[in-house]
Length: 137
Image 1: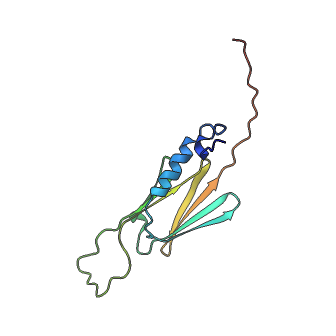
Image 2: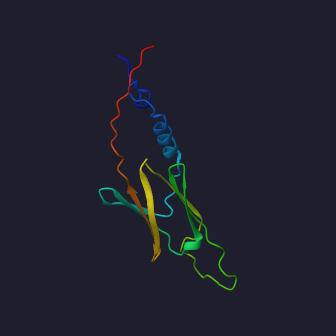
Image 3: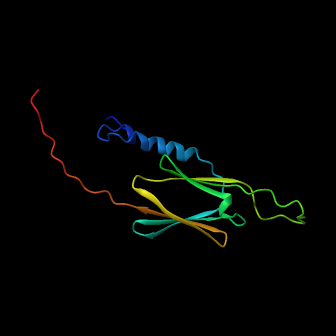
């Protein structure tokens, strides 16, 4: 009996990008900063919440790159007249990447009280039935 790996199974055609996605996700950094939550708000709506205390909206960029939501944060240096006796609030730069399935779109983002909330919606694909004509060789 022959054992097939998932992407190389002969009945699964065109799923090679899924294998690349799994490999890319496995290689992604395991850095825990900034911490985040992912909620299923409704059957087809997700909310990602990142704790970004101290970051202003201008310090954060979000881009969609090849079905990946990339969130980057970088703060400028504090004013030179500020003297910290203790600095425990993290202000380092960060990069978080979330892979999005086909049909999942970013519908909005808000920053409030140090929490960045990103809303995602899954659009259901239309079911299409098509008859394929067979021609003679």
